[in-house]
Length: 354
Image (cartoon, rainbow, N blue to C red; front, side, top):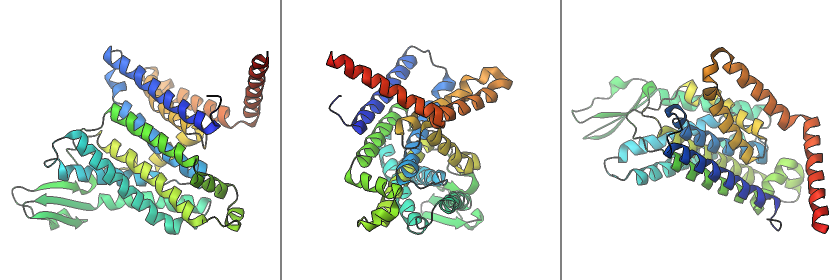
């Protein structure tokens, strides 16, 4: 470990942390020590962690504030579930079907990220945040007026009015407007969620430690200087934004296949979802992927752990949010933490010399 770079150490510590959490949860499940309510939160925790890592790549390493990642998550969820509904009779193996849905949903979200990124990444700051927020709302509203059905004659599409579609006796609705997609096979599992989370961790750490990653961080630190030395700024920004959107789409597919019915509501894929994911990123530490995972775990489990406290539940939740923000962002606490780390490192070096 001493010969590894800082990024490599971070990567291995993050992977070890996820694996330890997975083993602890599996032991609790095998021994029956975990309630059904907590079991229901395992896949959402994996989903939120994956999407938070994707957003952290955009905010922490690209330096662009996006409040529309719930939109990319929505694209992944609906395209993945749509693919599953079409292929579930042709592909009997559930794992293979989920893998196909993951690939389709991720590619669809990446395509949307690429197309949206071309005009959007010309903007900066609040303007970029507003446009990405608008994209998320547009996607949600488009799905709510979209009707897709299937019968023996093929697929049928309609906008706003499902009465435009006439089905025969074999017909079934796939996307039914605001009712969304129903009867989705429950294919998402905690193990699959952890596997996907580990793959995303390997991907993002490999990216930020590569030549492209260093170029992206250079653009974040000083775009004018990066352009002056010949870096293709637009290409790198678009590349990072597309990868970030694809990761959000991957999380969306996992999220959709944990539900029997997925709908494009404000609760699932609206403004509040985007803000919640951004809270995970900020409280976990911008640019710190492990922090995003920890924040997603704590803030997802905490309301349920405190449910027995009734009236005091949200008060304690708010206090924890404030404490996490102070620990991560208070200049005084951060400087003390840095000094403490320096002292501990110095003591280790002194002991090694002895």
